[in-house]
Image (cartoon, rainbow, N blue to C red; front, side, top):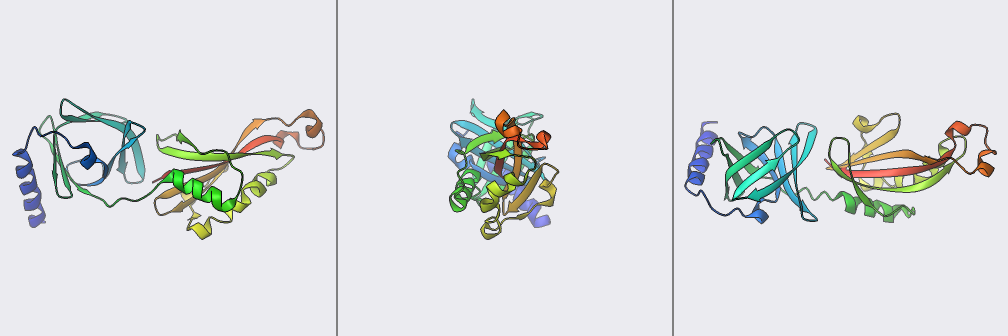
Length: 235
């Protein structure tokens, strides 16, 4: 522990001699693990369609915010607070961030997880050969960015039609490495995980069936046109 403390102190002292350098945005991108100071265990800087996104991880909870470089300061806008770093330094795979109040945080770069939720959905879509919709992006309730696709299904009396519609995809999940995720399973959805991927299978009511079809079923409460939805995101 003494050696680690000396290394961290040396890094901070070295960084303090290099203030006011222009921040290299490309070098900042990626995932960094906290080894000193920062409240979150990991921080990921990314850019998606000119939108600068920051992912903050603590335990099993992930929070999404934004980041920008303004007046040579790195500004991280999280869900609960905005942090301003007046100095950003890179030493090999180490990142040092210094807040305007002088507090230092030290990070080490993590290897890219290569988790691409959109690409994974496209792969599952191709393998299953189910005619899902085009893949679109969405934001989940916890502000996690995700991608989804769906297929409309006519339900007459029970929900077995939903299961049959997406069975070719669900049956392929074990072959793609996915396992059941008990934390994601609820009354209205089933969840799976594989490496850093999370997958949710759920459904959504769209509209009643046309009258001519509705009269053929005894249980009209469960009848209707539904979306069978597949959601994928990175943990």
